[in-house]
Amino acid sequence: MQWTLVVPLKPLPQAKSRLADTADDGLRPGLALAFAQDTVAAALGCPAVRDVVVVTNDALAARELAALGAGTVPDLPRAGLNAALAHAATVVGAARRAASVAALNADLPALRPSELARVLDAAAEFPRSFLADSAGLGTTLLAASRGRELRPQFGVGSRARHRASGAVELTLDAVDSVRQDVDTGGDLRAALALGVGPRTAAAAARLPAGQQ
Ligand SMILES: Nc1nc2c(ncn2[C@@H]2O[C@H](COP(=O)(O)OP(=O)(O)OP(=O)(O)O)[C@@H](O)[C@H]2O)c(=O)[nH]1
Ligand SMILES: C=C(OP(=O)(O)O)C(=O)O
Image 1 (tube, rainbow, N blue to C red):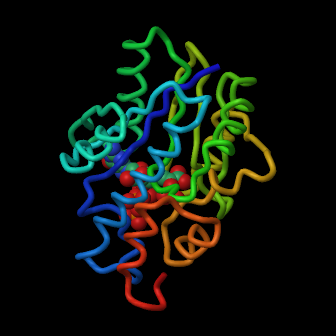
Image 2 (image 1 turned 60 degrees about the vertical axis):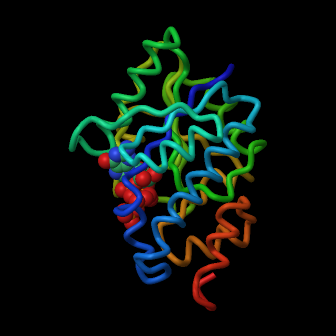
């Protein structure tokens, strides 16, 4: 089965606020863009992925991610993350005759196509399923098979909410790169240890010594 991935991205000046201790206002937007570029490039390199659609109101990010081969959909005004995802999932479902759709966070700079393929192949067995993040509290991927609604409930504590919503938790080993979202300086160090994509490696090299 091939999937359409929907990747949500905040306007870059507001993105990754929890990285403020690691990257100042001058560097943080570029770091957030680099995470999204490496995430989208890895996703587009995954054999289980048919296409990637980024939902964002950020014009620069939309342009840069379209240059990698992603489609883009604008956010609904002031609706928030879950409304943006549900909207984008509806748009791509309508355009692609009830495609199988998965939401994937934009902050997975260590993402490996082969690990994403294993997660999506496992997700194909269930109507709705999700993968917990490396911290064990959040979600990095929520999948809905053909014809099923995504019903996203991302945000703080989303692992428990997705489970309570009836989505099946995917319990795969050795898919660390799909779980490793980057919210804090510690997360960034963990992602760098796994091995990040080239744009994040370049952006991280510009951080002050000790923050990389
Ligand atoms: N399109 C869209 N994406 C969003 C919105 N809110 C959050 N996101 C994206 O959803 C994912 C998780 O978002 P958050 O953890 O809330 O925000 P973040 O920028 O990653 O980090 P913090 O600012 O530290 O909370 C990231 O890929 C965000 O860019 C929104 O309102 N619209
Ligand atoms: C939005 C989520 O991610 P983050 O860890 O970036 O807040 C989530 O886990 O639901």
